[in-house]
Image 1 (cartoon, helix red, strand yellow):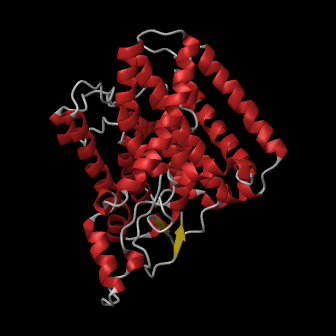
Image 2 (cartoon, rainbow, N blue to C red):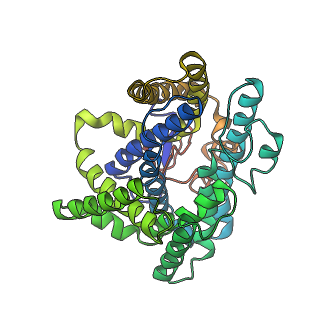
Length: 384
């Protein structure tokens, strides 16, 4: 993706280097998680099945934390601004890519599609996307839900807001609340990270700025202890255990990212983070057919071979997704509602001041984000 294809349009602080690095690590873990899932479905066993419990601790929580950091100012907006600048772009992206996903699995029969409640080619799954987020794109749907929830609950004291979100998270991960839908369950489990980022953004920035060996070791110790319990024992039912593991994983990942983002030899991780939206949207279109083909060709293989296949497919999925990104980003409507492009074009052509590019809706800054904006726009922009 070229530097001008996608840009950040922000009024918030300039994105820190650690954010892209943390997103790069997280999206690689998301791809590994899905590779593991679909290869196992195809009969190719690699990493132990319980490893998925560990892979769940970091990626989504850190994505939502960063989304919350960049959504902090949205709680002060009117609902009209919230709709135009957050909810509309995200819901548009979710609907468009849900249709793309449906068409893909409908045109190419025989693929397993999503391993969720409804088959990927089932028209009902498409018809219910706004109330029953059963596809892998539940994350984008959750961004809209979280932005609205943070805005609707903005009058709550921040500490009460976060405590209530933490109680909801623990109730879901412990199995006390179960909606029967993977998307809604994850919304309930992960809102706490978005809320914390949105309500305590200055403290998060300050903590990262004051990164220390002691804090890093403390976070590592908490992560090792909670991850070991989750990996070795069937202990998800213990209240707050999963939340402790996620919080410590995010703390450790963010603190390490503050160090590692400075290393030029690891710059590719930050590149993945900057392009994480495209990887997220595209990677399953690569993984699912390859996993299905490998299952037909290889069948059961030795676990060591399976692990090698897993990591090889992770690399292939990321690289191919980045290549596909160069093609799909040329089709602007795949990422940006046409109304946004029209407003920005009008503003650039000298439209009245009431039509402002700074008020034009954008995909929320942060997690998997490439905020779309045409080249040469007059907004203050930060190129990804």
